[in-house]
Image 1 (cartoon, rainbow, N blue to C red):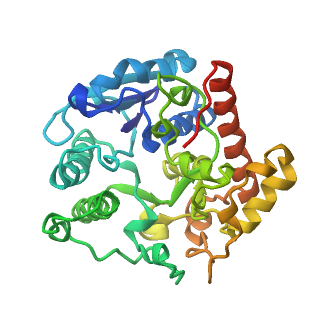
Image 2: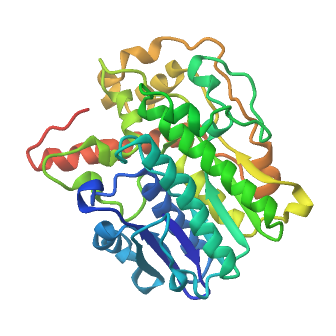
Length: 366
């Protein structure tokens, strides 16, 4: 998805594919993040537009209807080749947050093409339209995936995951997670290569891990549909493990989704590259042992104590933050949301979804 910040409104542009290839339920964490971004924009500017997929257009419009005429939604049917001059008309800035989720494209090649070539196409059109300020959502895994193997060596903004397009396409057994990580790493590299060729652009990338926290206003997908699909919880489905006693561990490698939204908004008025250097912002919440997360829920949500995941008691050797959020503070002037608030707000959101379905006579679970 793409967000154009216009003088009078926010324009949401929705990327489209065939009806069978996308879910109108809008389960993407990109959409979740975008909804929170719009909420932040509403606080930051008087009135504010973005791109969605045609098949999702009406659902996106319904989601943003709570903002009245302040949000305009248009569709982009082809991120790679499509030309959309009207989408960038009168826009002063761009936020681009699209990347196909795991398994959403038919082949690894298609996923890489949409992410890399699609991102470049949108940014090139924005630059041609005179837009100079761009925010872009990447991933901390574009810098390193070592933490997934239990290596918590500090990571900085100068590091890159050593993965190539050929690594993905030549591996017939490549898994979806590797493809997605490659999408993020290779598309961000392509964006920075373009910026190197167009130094007048002011680009900020934010590189977070998994998103936890509450859903955004207007995001109704988890409450809709028949049957229930945990896909609609986005990455909050990972946190849901926390209140499933026999489930797997709820990953402690997270960031508050509201912080990502705040970072995107702050990037639009951040100091120039000439002042602060390349604005590649690695960001995380404070990471603590799973047992601390479990204890928090037991203490502050005692009615859930019997549901807390048993696997959360097992320690993770050497667990520590891999980034100090220094650039988040220096460049964007932000501090991470306290981890306890992120966890409790996320758990409360999940319980609200459970209760809504229970009221319909449906017990939901992972």
